[in-house]
Length: 96
Image (cartoon, rainbow, N blue to C red; front, side, top):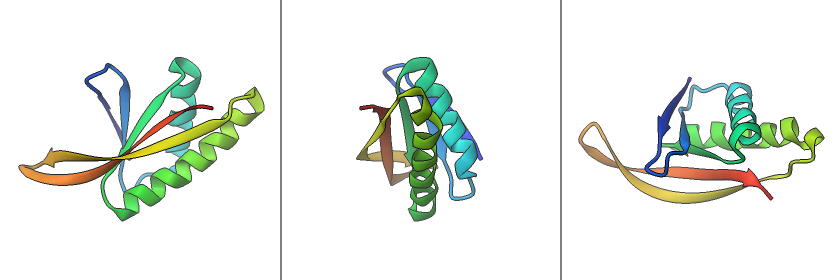
């Protein structure tokens, strides 16, 4: 399961859960990279981060034949979910 949101800078944000299919997330990442040249992916919790890292690795394979070498820049982010403050990890994925 992947949900999308828009960041304050107008970039589409993919929200990944621990139940997300890494190949599906990778397809979404690859599509956004091809379309806009940049992608942001957010995960909360160890399982979601695991699925996100797998997806980024798979996405690198999807776009490599087109000459695109992806890099991911992780950052911690404090967000509010259901009235509680949670720590998320946001990955900025872009070509090198």
